Image 1 (spheres, helix red, strand yellow):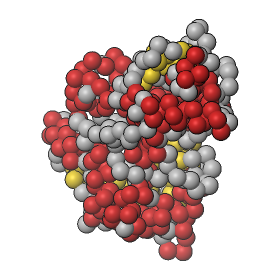
Image 2: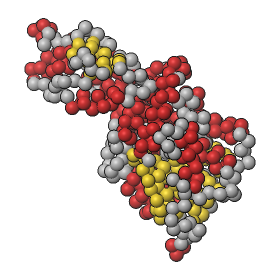
Image 3: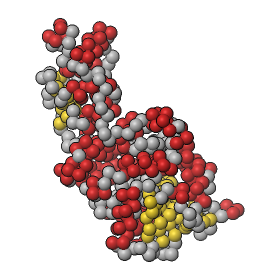
Length: 435
């Protein structure tokens, strides 16, 4: 340890060494000139100033590291900020290196942090949302997933700007898992193939009526309309709605396709032949699954099909979303296991016919989005600012890592609303779609 210890002060490197065990997966350098960790490590963390120390000290773990990184106070070298995939392996190693220092060392660390004024609470980055507990304290527990709060949560993530999203999505502006016909397929081919798969699973044909819940920019609505289906999509993002309606007009699909700025709970029509829900259940809330599936079942005619496409955990244990995800990515978002989704479909109006896990397809999708963001990085920074561009690169690469390592999965669950006496109507007994 350096001579600063003799003066009851420590360098940043001293603090790192006192709270971790070697070898570290990073070479760490700091504003005070100190450094630690192997010099040949593939990644370098540079603690640029005391603000970085404050963020980490006052919110230890993912949240503090993310705040410092997004604000440019913690600099990562060795990965592009649009696609920092490898950092997540290194972070897992790093977390396993931590140890609790003895009492005298802890006192010395606290004295050093106070001396450098690093125990002050930093101003929260402007893109950070209030934590769920604070929203509950202010608005009451009953307000979670109310129509107004869901609208705000969706707007937070999806109304960053259509031009920004266009820098990394494909031309259809599809922001959900693609379905790759081959590992070498392009993102555009894979997204088109996803819509083809869902269209076929729902047994849609010319003249049918489709409700697409949480339609995003309207990709499924337009695909169905191009095949002669009357399709209505609903979204809580005003920017998605405006872009989707304009694109429908541009493609001359007004007679068959419509995107509405509307909560799915307010759709007045019923007797749809099919319902698609692609990437919406993550925003519904697990406690609302019964009413969600009951409502959608009521919108189908007997013999109608519903496909629910959503992110899940690999098991059905209840857990809280991490602070970073809840405050920066999907406020009020909730995940559970596919078994829980299937249970609630079965309990609320559906016979479940088929389910499959497409997590590796989502891994490829996210990798493609990150690479597109990387290619358009300068424009993304100019449009949204560097903190927001960093945020999207971090969360998409982290999600890619999560799908690759089975932290999260992507399940499509297909169900039918039965006729009286348990008949499926014209729905076949065996799988009828092309994989």
